[in-house]
Length: 91
Image (cartoon, rainbow, N blue to C red; front, side):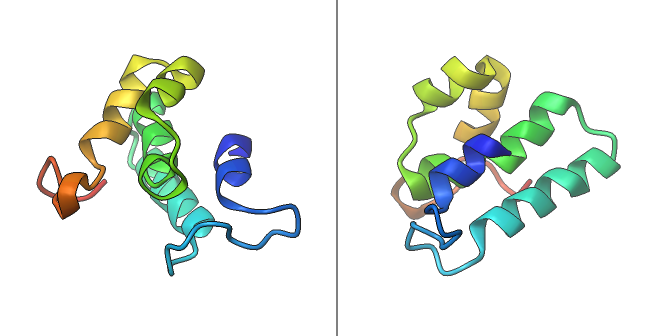
């Protein structure tokens, strides 16, 4: 959660990215929803970080370095390359 917050909020708690939705609340809600449904912890972490690459400019390599390949792959498959999802649906 700290990684998500550091990437998306400034020191005053204001969103520092241009996405109009409340990214931190949205991302945490996604993670908690999946956790409640019994998903693997790496999938849950990937869900929490799913907007970090797209909206905060954090590279997939940096996510992999900090959280491992499975989390990085989860983030990668739900990002918007050229405005389109790589997979159908939304975690």
